[in-house]
Image 1 (spheres, one colour):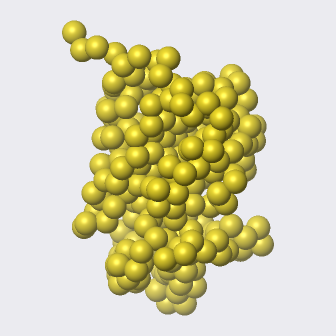
Image 2 (spheres, helix red, strand yellow):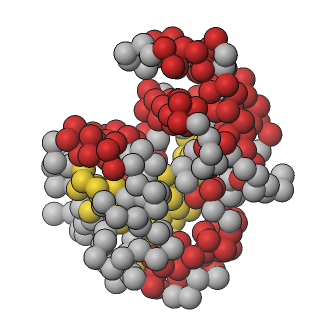
Length: 266
């Protein structure tokens, strides 16, 4: 299946705020409540433990809520996560920072993942966002990490194949109804209206999800982009697919500088 870089409603600057908020809430709570990223979080934890990493730069973080789930999943007092985005949701970031008990903080300024400021050091983590970038930009993301000798991890829950798209289309109406009618607490009139009564939110969520699958990269495409990055030979690369919720798959990419030797267990 050829990759198609179509538009998503949530990318449109003119999308009304109630619709955007509904889509973001559905996406976040679906990911957390269904534990879609547990396998990916475990793989990330393995990379961090092997290389003695304790700092995560969560980039393209959206509303940042998933990183609170990651912090709790890791359960490590020594790991700190810093949220950033090109268009940061500062109010939501601050809320997450308070809820995290000091394990999550945020960058107040805009951060371009193609040119990350040098002081933001640590493992660069991009979850469910790489498919938003065209191939030259994905290559640029990898090249910036390599040029600045920072570890990097991609986690993508969408797959560009017919079975994955059909599974998503079948499950989404049920998930949208569940989240609208009490799956997200407290019950909210906006979600009831946009999710069930006049389900524009659910339809936009379904459309965006299908487009995300069509935008997704295969592992071989990521591997080909890595080969085009100057200095990629100085990294240890790991690319694999992990089992997710109900047989779904999560694509995983990790790159760590070879100069950062694995930490030997005592």
